[in-house]
Length: 420
Length: 163
Image (tube, rainbow over all chains, first blue to last red; front, side, top):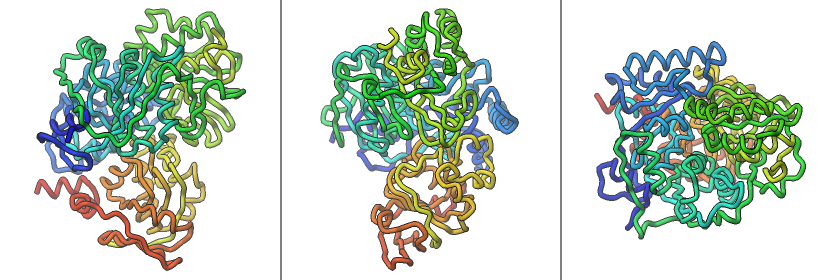
């Protein structure tokens, strides 16, 4: 029986010729990731293990990014714990404030994740690296600890759903609209325990940043991972950013899929997920009048250069509506610098937005943009659960950078068409 | 091994942000996390939960973030078992890894209400609703997972293996 792309990567890392859905395997890990929230718990667990240090100091990435620069004393203690662990174990890829970025934008940019890798990360959005043709998935702190200690993790081999993306995306359609459309279609548990494998001629029109956004939100459909085939664009990205050897896996022609969906990219419309689930999607033409208080453009989902470029294109020459707090967060230092060199930051500041150092802060209601009772935010982040960005009676509407930027100008959820 | 307690009943897609809101994630102390468990979905939970009580929910329990703080908070609040129609996969792994027993059983989810007194036998996977005098067969764990639970988590399991 044929294997999916994910199954082939897992088989190779388990030292097996083939695997099938449901099989339990132990796989070799190419990278283990943690952040300032999950790593302290993992470090504490690892301390309890009878092991001598980490399995490979070059294959662990520690990225304090959620509550840094330290938001309070307790966060500072967590970061200190991670910093000291990194120092003690001579971890090569520890990223201090000044070098750090939002982990899932940072790791591919630093060349730490490439096609064919198996990556676990103690952060649910670790699935992002599937954009490069890697198997990567989120785990908890104990799995991270075991991964750091042994270089191994157990997995139940997932079955898969195939998403065939066809045609050229319609105007204003980005990776965010595509993945929100998909989550709206299959629901927040539509891909529970499964791989989401993206294929089709439409992929050639998607930038790497679009693909990162799509793979990033596989978890919002319950998926174990999201994965793209490795084409020339992905290879060029890896050659530019990484010295690691990559390996291209392709799904067998007779691979078995639980379901198959065709997404016609030329027929999509900008899509917004209403509170309080990413599956509550509406296309922009059916949104109606929804006044907002805040806009956030950033996060591991949409804080990359393409995202900032489209936001700047829309905000250029405009002012954000009076009273709309518009917070823009480049995901890494490199993106920040490039946005500065391209003049994007000037456009944002002149429009009346604030630009922040890289942080996950507002996405999870940590800091840097918490909502008060009754407030509404249009956000390019990934979750709109109850209380996600602040007060239990606040609301988050998930959208693309284009819709978020347009909404900042009008003060209500808006299509880019309204302001361009 | 058995669990026995009163039921707290929740619906679909109970996410990790309502189980333990991120505003409390500047702590990783189980006892402190427990004082905020379920706060954004049921502010009386912490006040009412007693040691041994059981959470029963519908689809996709624990969806969202990978924060292990979520099952840690539930366990530290005294909950002895979570039963749901389905669990989100990272929560599922995390619960097993920290030794919080969880069982997928759609029939039990449908046949159990808030306040029911239930008993769960982890060896057989049987769930008994003592209030309604009904019983359900939950999914049994594969052998290696039973070992992880018996060792009260992955860390002890790894330590036992390396002996």
